[in-house]
Length: 169
Image (cartoon, rainbow, N blue to C red):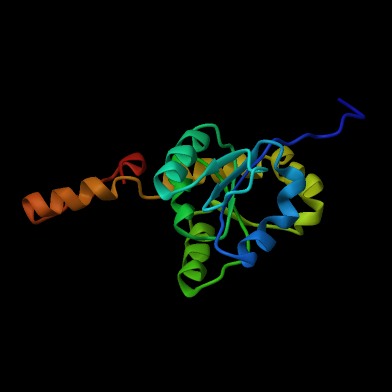
């Protein structure tokens, strides 16, 4: 496919909590051909406006089913790597995100972002080199996925059986 320009359809999810969040997504607006998911905004330009948390999570749950890459600060969304979604990590903000970044690197499911202005170059380099596929596989194998079941097991029995299968951890 020589001469063809790589194209990318992306959703950008954000929370309307002030100018900081809007500035954070600004470098990604040229990628948001899929649209925006925004909580707490009344902007008519939002493709998929969600006025409250419940609507936001419903919309996010629908969109995440078709997600190939999750680009986020290493927040609670880091744990989506357990679904086999590679994480591109934007800069962390707080101490918990520093530890989440370390964890994502440890399980090899997270990749630090490069300059957002050149995403159309470095993102496709990662795709073509198989690095995102490798991160997706590593996240699926190494991230813990059965935490809720383990908590219920501890509450019911007072103990927790150690799983040997990486898919059941």
